[in-house]
Amino acid sequence: MGNSGTNLMTEGKISSKIIQFALPIFWGNLFQQLYSLVDGLVVGNFVGMEALAAISSTGSLTFLIIGLFNGIFMGSSVVISKYFGAGDDEKVSKAIHTDIGFALICGVLMTLLGIFVAPSILRLMKTPDEIFDLANQYLTLHFAGIMTIALYNTASGIFQAVGDSKHPLYYLIISSVSNIVLDVLFVGVFHWGVAGAAVATIIAQLLSVILSFWKLMHIDAVHKVSLGKICLDKEILKEIIGIGLPSGVQNSVIGFANVIVQANINIFGAAAVAGYGASARLEGFVFIPITSLALAMSTYEGQNLGARNYERAKKGADFGIISSIVLAETIGIITFILAPQLIELFTTDPDAVAVGALKNRTTALFYFALALSHCFAGILRGAGKSKVPMFVMLGTWCIFRVLYIEIATYFIKDIVVVFWAYPITWIMSTVIFFIYYLKSDWLHGFEKHTR
Image (tube, rainbow, N blue to C red; front, side, top):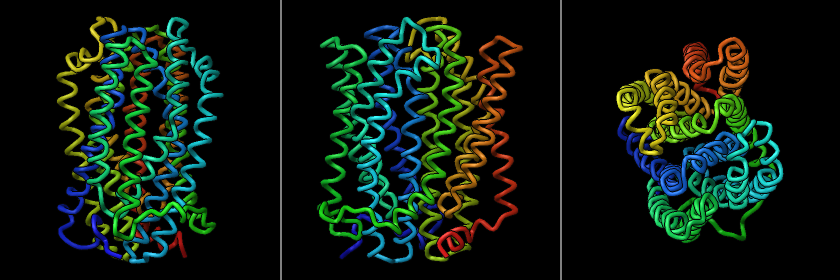
């Protein structure tokens, strides 16, 4: 069987390989963010500020639940890339079909968990009464279609593990354009409100799933999918969970901390929720180059360390670190300068715009620290040492962030105090990661993990 569509990152110019792989991920993530952006733009402009606040208030809760499973899927991608780099086609196939079987189970669990637990958590988050019903409606519909997210992320992870970041991009472009059309139709023309935005997103995501798996089932390559081979290989699944569970826990603890942040934002009213939500949607875009590079680093390190190319792995990591800093600060400066104008794309309510601009100007110049944390986490995850990012994020982005917010807001009732939780904890995690990167033998993490 051939390897058409794959990209072996164990040879060739390092910077070119990483950039060529990261760029389609960047564009793919950009179009994926359009799901969230278009929901916000259409709902905010056609329905109103309260509807925008309702959708915005669900973001951190959604990430809390989905983040756990998406982190586990990251582990499967690392396992596949390791075997692909080592040239073990049989284990690549086993890992892929175990990954799909596991995704189906996770999709069912996410649906049930989201529908039955989320409404109660919305109450615990002190969601304002005037937006609670809309938020609950949007969240229930969102989780009803969560299987599409699980399956698309699985397919995308398979493509990326073998170095193919282009096909996920193609499918996301198609589904994103569909989402835009359906959003305008359901919300702007049919006046279905937040329910229309949720349904439009589900249909668009389903389209990307169909396209992705059609390609995987018809490709003549090592990562070909056959429905009859879907399984749960015990040893492969153990390896996937061993690497992926720490990443999932990492995502979830970050999500939990953000739920606490959201609860503290909710206290300031609907305008604050809308402004903070608009800022979060904007940052979802400006973070794309950062997260895309981090994902590229995981695949790059997984393939090269799977092939025992230690020196090449180290050079690639150094390139990723320097690139992260340059990218993040360029984006941060632009965001700082244009903050009010960018927030006004989502809402024209002056109070909401003021809150959103304040949030961005508090955090934008510290994006370098966020970028470095993501980059170090991607490198270590690709090296099979996913427990390190988990513990660092648990300590800084969860425990310390929550303690800081609870203590600081007790003494100072100002929303900017909540916003400062982000740059403070980004800097803390970056310092810890940097020390670990310099002092540890992370290059041999895969070897020790699988020995």
